[in-house]
Length: 454
Image 1 (cartoon, rainbow, N blue to C red):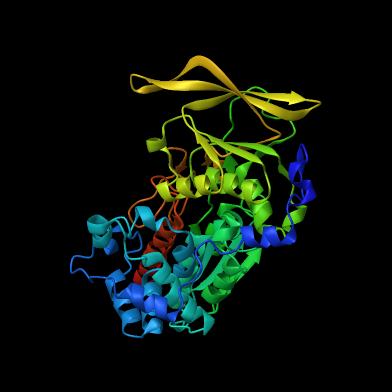
Image 2: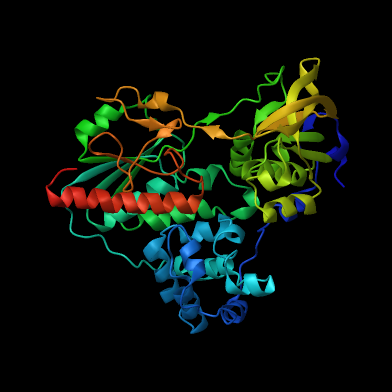
């Protein structure tokens, strides 16, 4: 055990180098060739394919699994990439247990689904490992499209537009492309810098120029893009972090879970990343679980997730909750933050109030609980920041605080489409963002080729 493990307060170097390496190794090691064949043989290749219907990108799952079973992993990869060009990352981060694998006939009948996600990773890893490119860029169309945001939605849009011969410029605020795939998921879900390898694979088709460090509302305005490009796609993601609305939440030691995860993802030396000895995470979604588990893996002694409703209401899947429990994270329900307690300007504890349903509304009971903590993470959701859209020639219509789009991804502004987490009605999943970007690209292409303008 590293000597720093029991240091009070927020500190780094709590574990040995070997422990860090082991803790942040691949969560789901890839299937080897034999394992993939055995797993593929479990598929019934159902004619009605409930798994395919459950996939937001509508990948032909029975077909790609049959191609693996018949020794054709490259054909399998093409089947996947035809629908989801980010199929490699989605194979790693998709909550398959609540999508395709949940409706697998073997899951329904036996409680053990075909491991669709791991089979998808097997096929896409083979193709990417051989740098097998399945698509060629069409003859240049002379049309230009600006894509704001190099996350899953933006990358999927750019690739599909490039296939059609359009010139795409991606404007990304961060230093690296990838969006949440690069900055927002647990490090053990995507190892060996896979997010950047996938960006390189996607952009290898040509016709895609990524400009990093370019933020909408700071370095350029939407009106500039509408004037200078034939079409615009907004894949902005969510830039705001919801507040706890608890007294004292601005003291040292209270941090945003998304920023913590991003910092961890970019750290070259995990021992340099400080973490508390006693950590409390407020929230009930995937981000809360990712922050909590990674805190434990960095050497935190006690980690507690507090959620204001019951277990059945948590957005984090059952698998993610079990993963947290397996790593020693305690999950407590029906608690909401009330007051952050500080000593010498730093977090020392958090006071929470028990909650209960009062009719159809959640209400505090007046009873409280105090948990000692030297670090508190906020993971109660992110919000869209519409202020970045200021400067457009007209206002974009919003709904529910996010951008309103039609079935093709069109916004209320001519020439402007949107997709991913920034649009209303999304489910904040990587795979859904890819589907929205892909479909918006097809709509943009139709608009540009039908009359020459969007």
